[in-house]
Image (tube, rainbow, N blue to C red):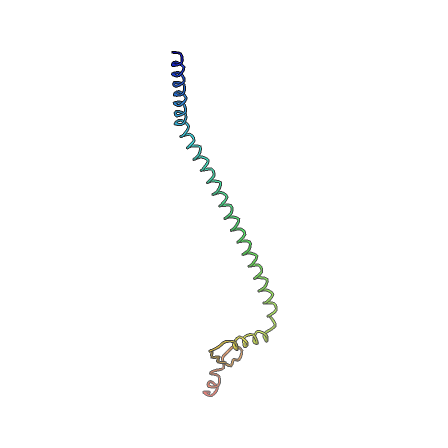
Length: 128
């Protein structure tokens, strides 16, 4: 009888261990889900923070580059403006050379006197 009692005790002990494992799993599973969700949320928050920082740094770099381009353009414009101040002949030549490079264009020259077209001056003098 002692061997039957020992076998029965082993089965009861094994059953108790099995019940405790199942009970522990049922108790621990919801807690693990909460922990897992917390860790997932923290990882997503860290990723979102990093993405925002990347966007901010990219925008700052683009702003700085745009400022440098604008400063360069302003300096170039100043240099060109200074060099063309007393150089009306060059501007006239440049204008004429651009006209020569155009195709299928008609150019009409209007004589002027002090930026006033001389179209009607002959007729006005004749009417008097």
